[in-house]
Image (cartoon, rainbow, N blue to C red; front, top):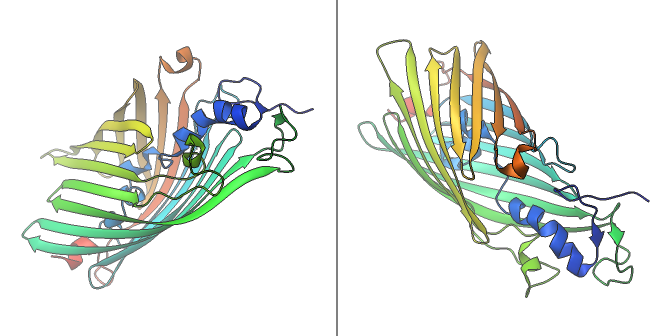
Amino acid sequence: MKRNYDRTGKRVYLGTGTLLATVIPILMHAQLLPLSNQYLLSPSVISPAFAGRDCPFEAFLTSRIEWTAVPGHPVIGILNVDGALPKRLGIGGNITINSAGPLNNLTLNVDLAYHLKVAVDHTLSFGINVSYYQNVLDLTDAVLSDPNDPLLKGRSEISESYINLGASLLYSWRTLDICVAFPLLFNNRSFYSSESIYSHVLTMDRNFYVYAGYLLKTKTDWSGKFGFLLRKTQFTPMSFDISALALYKEMGWLGLIYRKNNILCFTGGLTITRGLKFSYSYEYSPSAMRGKSYGTHEITLGYQLASKSDKPSLQEYIK
């Protein structure tokens, strides 16, 4: 008989009660939309208001493997694309696949942005997104403590799918960005339960982000980029990032991110050829699983199309 493990490496016996006890830590973590460090290169992945603002077209693909020493560790893949349209519009979207032990999540987003110049160097950007997400709890290898449990009997999986809406507002002044985003505006109700904590397990509850970023330019070939990102949903603790990057021309960058719960991330990247970018990040926490998780690895490959006179970026449209 195959074994099933939770994030701690313990064998999982599933009944209605033990289902909640063993997989809720995974599922509650999943209520926060999966997020990588890709937003440091392309902030449209966290807010549709950024879509099409910085260049005519960009695409970024990220692979993220968390807690590599832990059985059933999370594996995340993100593809994010956005570009500029005429009339101060931007369009984009992303696909996120997240697998963590018995839980699999698929999220699809379609984004639309409008950029309005309100004064010299001052821009307001409005973004909306339509989201589809699906959470699937795989029971194939589970050992059922009660084979007659009505919730689990005869099932190889438990899944729920929903459509939701999001909105965001971005204020930009020169190289300063301040953004508030609600990727999911509404709480979806579970098909399986509406009275217990389980009703918030396979659903994705209302999320919101607060992001601030500033690019400090100097008279040398070096510049600095500083950021703050706060994330919150109704039924999980607040999470935040503080980041600092040192950039050399358009060639490369090195940086450090501090994340809540004493997580440190070292990140760096380079421009391989014109427009083609590569980034690697390593995250480690001495307190997570007593420092034996072996950390998190993330690789991002992206392409940004430079602005041309016949295909100007949104920044050129709104001047």
